[in-house]
Image 1 (cartoon, helix red, strand yellow):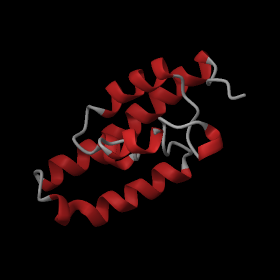
Image 2 (cartoon, rainbow, N blue to C red):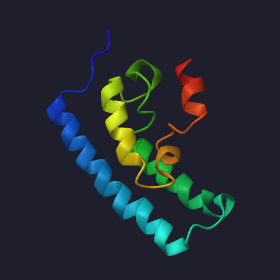
Image 3 (cartoon, one colour):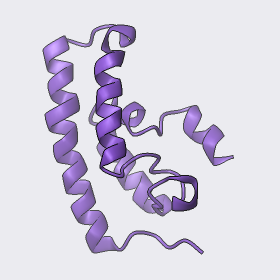
Length: 104
């Protein structure tokens, strides 16, 4: 049975992800002034690879499915953090409607 990430570890994880969003996504948004998604996609795909390398991919899924194994409450808190960028949920692969389809 999967268990959620311990709270102390989760707090540190959130801090790391907040810094990542500020330095990678919010900076990208300002530099590119919200260009069309297709124009941004190559840069976003590079950031997605970094997210994968950091082990932050699929936060809504259990580790048995390649996810982060967050509880629903933890995923909600992370989701609020990801919402500080229009691309946050996309680069962590937890954007609607795909996330819901994965969970089913």
